[in-house]
Image 1: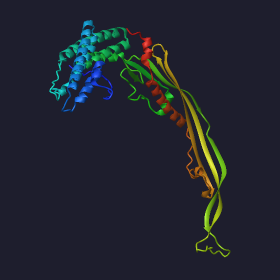
Image 2: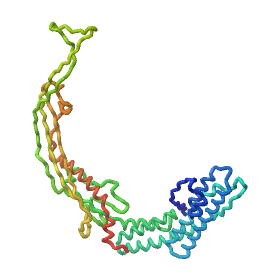
Image 3: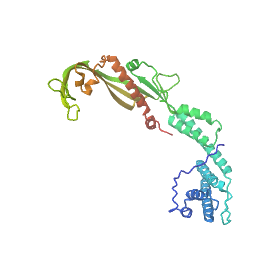
Image 4: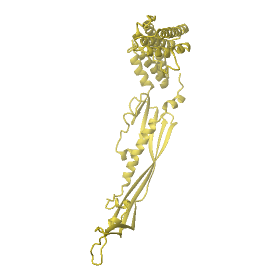
Length: 396
């Protein structure tokens, strides 16, 4: 039999200035009191009597409380209660395992802590056994009814009951076989259809990513022998609008004043000197210009697609999405005639740039088709088939 420790998820903030073990015990916060007590006792050679007594009290109170809950649940006699009994027994064991490493506990005054450890293993065995028997009976009944009514949601509930047995046993009767049966019966099968033009553009016939299938939903891109489909998800291209090729040629001039400092010269061309013998500099402005021819090519496409999922039997719409994709092509380049120093940075980086040819129509549609395919996969990933079929199938 598997054994599990039932962990109580509690956040403890230890601020001893405003919290004491005694106060926690008085407030009935026994788990916190035990954690704080063991924290105070850990690694201490001279243990205080009051800390040991506080731990004793919290330990006894918590175990007594859990045993009382177990007695009440036993008295109710419900099969489902064995899980709670198992949880409370696990809580007792968790508490004892937290305290056991400190044994024996002796204070610096000679006080010896008295802790009554309970063997909860027989209780855990009993609770696990009876809870597993309950889950097995309940799951089997649900599976039998699911087979009769072909109720997938009921088969899923049966599978979950069988799964819960795994908390108590690695193997139990024929649970593994029943889990497979309930999984097969409870799984939704979805047929995927894609506009043939999209398939042709993206060059694939099998377009389902490996991770799109889930435990309860299986997708196929073709009819399968022996598979009864529950829904059909389809992708269509609704409209393709491609603009004409546009080429614009702009001619313009760019000018710039270039400033420099040069040696001053006399009428004979000799460099002038100041009184210290240094060359005299004068500011010189040079005007430069360049003639630019700019060629801009553009072409655009808008592709509209529709993804929809319908009930395979009734044709009822489950979900629909509309996708619009804009594909833009732009290429531009500049040629220079003149002084390159006159160019702005924007023009400079486009001089002698290779002008790209216009894309073919099919290339733009191909790009849009890939995007449509990605949208389609997103559509089926977001399907809430369980909510839809909960309305269609009445769980029993």
